[in-house]
Image (cartoon, rainbow, N blue to C red; front, side):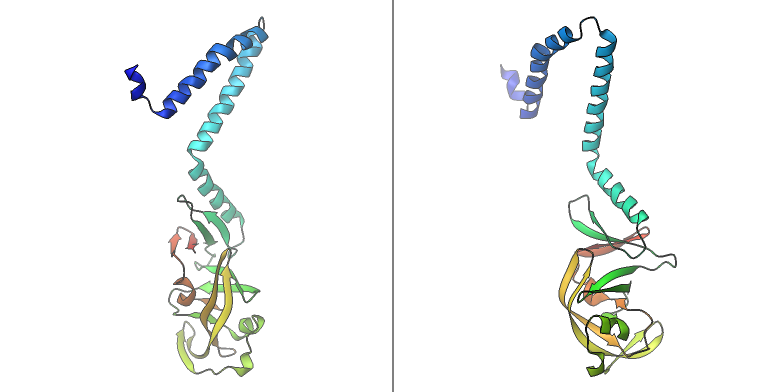
Length: 212
């Protein structure tokens, strides 16, 4: 019986299952399908096919999850965050590139939603005045004393701290931000003061993946 020591637990269990099937199940099946060989073969083929599909699906479950996430992203509107699961089980948010090659994320700031341009060149989250007002910031009481460089040139901004900012299921509190002087910024920027709190972020093809 030394050969038993060479088998792992999984092999022993599989041997027991197949042995039980041959000894106890097959005789009953033969009796039930006596004289109906065609029906027996049809049913056997169906069950074998189902078993193969189940085994195949389990074996490639990580691949199917990734494909499902990509299909969902393809069907989504650009900017709408899609929550996905990485092959290592980590939760992430994926954003599709817009037709002009940029990444725009539908973001919630203090409970108000609007689009923000993901900008790794911006050292901070920068809100245009109208978006800041929607997020409950008192723009009339701000001091626009910080000069920053944007794609539209130099502008003065006011430092603020946002109560909460989230993209999909990724949420951070107390994020440092700037509010641009009214009329000096065309779109709000999701900058480094938010991105640096992530575990990682990376561009993969036409998608930006944020891991929070």
